[in-house]
Image (cartoon, rainbow, N blue to C red):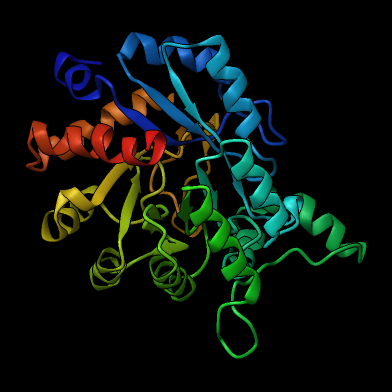
Length: 305
């Protein structure tokens, strides 16, 4: 990490990291990452799991590491009951900060994952083949309207001042969710990795989400479009509406266009990935002040408020 990267990352958050132990191989535990974040001068991170709530993990980490700040949350996949208001209520009571809508269980993305990254949904496929469950989740009903459970969940997110994130649901679902969240009075709304193959929002779609109060997340590991195109979109819409994260945590990246990742091979640690990301955005014309807003100020609204 060079001096410029270290300066930009001073006090930064990465709100999208996957840690071990997990049912998938992971590159590091939270405590292993703590030493790297201290060395980089970073402030904290969100602990994301596709399968289990992470609120208690974040609390335990913070009790051991008072100089850093971990954020926990919940992903509404089948392992927590899908669109389950009780799971959201418990996450809120425990101090959770982010509620991600379905990711690996999103009905929109399941066919692609089964074909191209089957290890991501191996457990769900196993139970489906044994006729034990059907895990694919849509947030829309048969008439194409948001399900009742979605509005119940949004009410709880608002009550506990958590952030709602779109996960891997389709752009159509995501924009409907963003509108409903905004109308519900939720102040923290995230469009999750808006440049991934499964969740690729056009500039106009990002602008619509921003108009409804959303911040747009771009992750270092997941773009299916060139970084230069991401930079151009952010410049067009204004960097004040974006934050940068990594979505790192896997030991290796399953590269290939069908998989939805441009990079492949051994994955960096999250601090290395975020440092590389800010360097790329700097090389594409973003100022120090703009970059610090996207890695410190904007994420802090979600992590600390």
